[in-house]
Image (cartoon, rainbow, N blue to C red; front, side, top):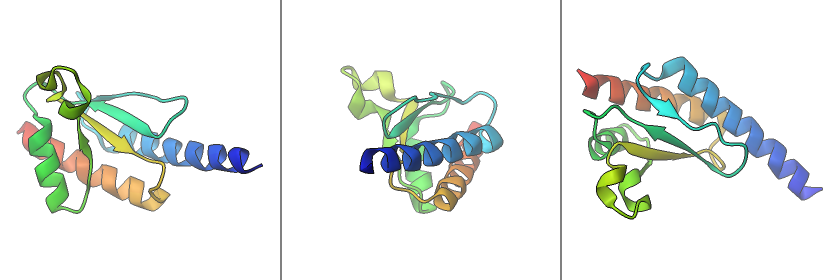
Length: 109
């Protein structure tokens, strides 16, 4: 019973995050569409570096995981980031992704 509840909760949060990504992200940002788990992976354009995104997003209250630490060769992750959606409230997900999209848009200029 608990597992069914948690699966439904995470699915709702994942769907809110995916909807916000579709609504706010620049066209050249790509992301995964997970069928399970707790994370969505984003791939940034090659001229946008995740450490710059992470620093500016954190200044605006959005915490994310930079991709370098998840790759055997850290430089392979310098244009990737991970969004955790499992513990965030739907409104926070939407707002955080909107802020993140603005940070990325600003760095693309």
